[in-house]
Image 1 (cartoon, rainbow, N blue to C red):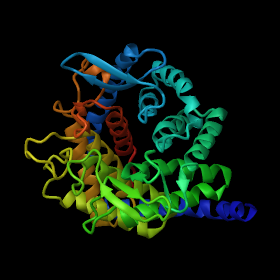
Image 2: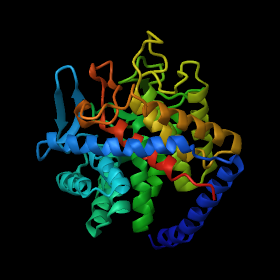
Image 3: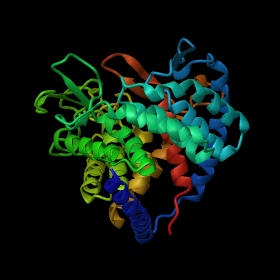
Length: 407
C-alpha cells in the first residue's frame, strides 16, 4: 500500500503535465479556433437551457428525478434515486449554474443531491459513475464541500465490489448465476475509479479500471472497431459465452449510443493513464464513426448505424451529444489532422443540436433541452423522447467548446 501511494504521488504530477503539454501542442499544430458565431449560439443555448431547467424543477415531486417527457400525452416521467440516470439532472443544473450564476439552479442541485447521496452505498449497479461522479464529481468543481469527497470515495468502493478478477470486468447487470453480463456503457463509470485513486492513493481502484478497459478492448470490439453492446462471460472461467445486444437493432449491429460510450470511455482512459493503446483505441472508434456510410451529414446518428428504414430511421440526439463532448477532448490528444477532423465534427453536432429540430422551444418538452433521443427501441422504452443524459452531455460539450483554448 505504501509503495503504491508513493508511486502514484510521483506519477500523477508528471502525467498531468504530460496531458496538458500533449493536448496543447496538438491543438496549436491544428490551429483550432472556435467559431465566433457558434459561440454566440452557445451563449443563447445556455440562457434557454436555464429557463427550461427552472421549468423542469417545478414539475418534480420532492424525492424524484426527471426521466423523460411524452409530448403527445403531456406526461412527465420520473424515477427514484436508484435509476441509473439520477446523476444527470443535478449535473446539468451545476453546469448551467457555472455559466449563469443563477442561485436557483445551485439550490435545486443541492436539494436533489441530498436525495441522491444514499446511493453511495448502492452495490447493485455498475452505474455509480453516471449517478455519483456526474453529480457530486461535478459539484466538486463548482461548489466544493468536504462531504462530497467522502461520498465519492464510498461510491468508488461500492462500484469496486462488482469487479471479479476471474472475468477481469465490473459486472453490469445482475442475472442468473451462469451469466456475467458486461455492457459497453460501463466504460463511462471508470472515471470515478481513477478519481478515487488520485485522492486516496489506493491503486486498487486504478487497477480495476485498467483491467476492465483491457478486457473490454479485447472482447467488445469487432475488427472494424464497432462495438457489441453486451458480452456474456462465463463467471467461472472468464471466457466469452455470448456477444449480443440489448438496445441495438441486432447482435451484430452498431448501436449508436454504444459507439459513443466507447469513444468517450477510451478517451478518458488515455487522459487517466497516458497509455497510447487507449489513444489508439479512441482514434479507431472515432474513425469508425466518422467514416461510416450510415452517419448522416449532420452527424446526428441514427439510433443504430445498421437500423432499417434509413433515411427515415429515428435519430438519437443523446448519442450525438456524447460524441460531441468526446470529440472535443480527443481532438486535444490526436495528431493535428485527426484532431481537426474531430473538432469540426463536434462543431457540426453542436450547430445541429442547437437548431430548432433538436433544441426544444421555450416552455415545451417538459423542461428538457433536447428532443429526439432513443432509449431502447427494441424494448419500446423512451423512443423519440427527451432524456436527461442527452441534456447533460450536450451542455458538457458546449462547455468544452466555449472553454477550448490553444496554449
